[in-house]
Length: 91
View (cartoon, rainbow, N blue to C red):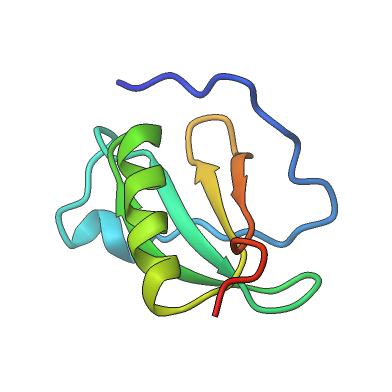
């Protein structure tokens, strides 16, 4: 299982687990959720990924089509482990 390193507490954020996804075939081999920031405290779930490298590559693809701030949430530690802000001057 991938480790969650350099974790950052998700203080004050209401992040949710998705038990329905586990029933749909997701496993603990895929412990990271990509979330798109909607406003100060709300996030939209985007997808589940296996590791941080995959999350970073996927967020770059997402930002190419839909600028916004994204976070990566580790299910194992229940912490936000990465934040991706839109590129400066992005269109």
